[in-house]
Image (cartoon, rainbow, N blue to C red):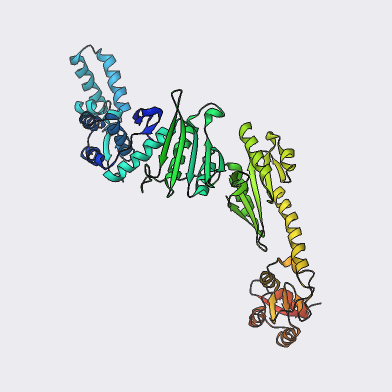
Length: 501
């Protein structure tokens, strides 16, 4: 963004159109960059003088100031002094009180006294006295990432962002609506995703004036949103602008603004600390459910909703959705409730901040409600998922035959379950007439007969492990137990096979 006093817009015809630059402004961009490069080693005041000369020669001084502001952010200025300026001032002011400065002669005496006290020459006192003033800072590095073309590109983006700072409503159509919704949610903006009459999806982002007192944070978030919009291939943005009390309309397209390959913006991964905290704790569990951030959009009448998360079950093509309703404005809560009411044939779990008082209303639409305060309890969500999982296991078990006869001599239940697209638990009621269940492994009796002949009392555990592995068996403990053996441990050196008592 630029400062508001750098904003250049046309209000012709009641509109609100940023004064974008094009290749005809390339020479000016090059001169601004050159002014900074030539000022390396000079005071900031010297650089300002050069920029003022450019302003006087240019058609629009605001354009020069805007370009310079973008370049200055990339530069490094330092205070350079032999003695810290605050120390010099303290010595000089004490000397001035002693001398009683009324003119140039007395000032020179005070400077000499301060220099003597500090152990430096008087000219150093003069140079360092106000070296930490902004105008006296030294430009030490002007190795910016811009060339004239990318500077103009960044200027157009920053100019449009500044114009959006006073938006009260933004409407965006893009070929990548999901990316935009993700950005909107991360920026904590109020939004709706609607389906237009021609079938396109339009993202409506509501500004603060219709909900609460305008804040700088909200205006800045609008500006940051434009970067995500401009990062998509094809887009159109329309915004309602509060121009000092006058309502104006702003229209931007991908032909106006693009994102240069500089100045990357790192955005947070989650909309809120509540969601981030929940995701971190849930993913630390070893469950048959995977947590997906911002899944595919769901149709809700004429609108579209992208839930915060979805849960995907490892053993079936089943998805349950999860929405976190935090502290929102009453108007936005009402819109969210309308969305939830319009969802059909979707299993949705909703964690609701108890302060909203809308849990019963959500439950009335057949959604599972989990009330929370400050943080969502993972156990509450897992309990609901386990209910779903029990139903899924029962359905999978009902679809299986009463008996299975795998071709394998040895097969683990986990692998067999994956083969049939079910969980291991779904195999509990199935019989295996051609195999013996040894722990979590199915083994043909003939293989067990061979194992009885190769496993003997006194054999080292490492030897047994190797022989069982040759037969495709990894569960050594369960197999030895089935054969009637145990392991006698010998400290850290290993173990020996013994008969089980």
